[in-house]
Image (cartoon, rainbow, N blue to C red):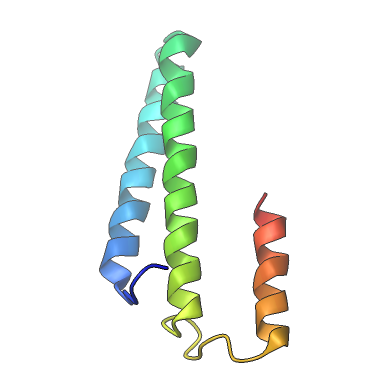
Length: 87
C-alpha cells in the first residue's frame, strides 16, 4: 500500500502535464500527423489519467479528499462503484 500522501500539488502537477499532453495531441491532429505518432501520445495521456486516478483514490482512502477516511462498508462500496464506472 502507498504511504499517505495528501499532496494536492502532486495531483495538480499530473493534471497540468495531462493538459499539455492533450494539447499536443490536438496540435498533432491539426497538423495532420500520422496516427503512428498520435496514438502513442493518446495512450500516454490515458496512462497519466490512470496515475491520477490512483492518486485520487489514495487520497480518498487516507481522508485527504472529503475530509474522512473510508470508515464503513458503505464508504468502501461507494468507492468500488466509482472504480467500476471509471472502466
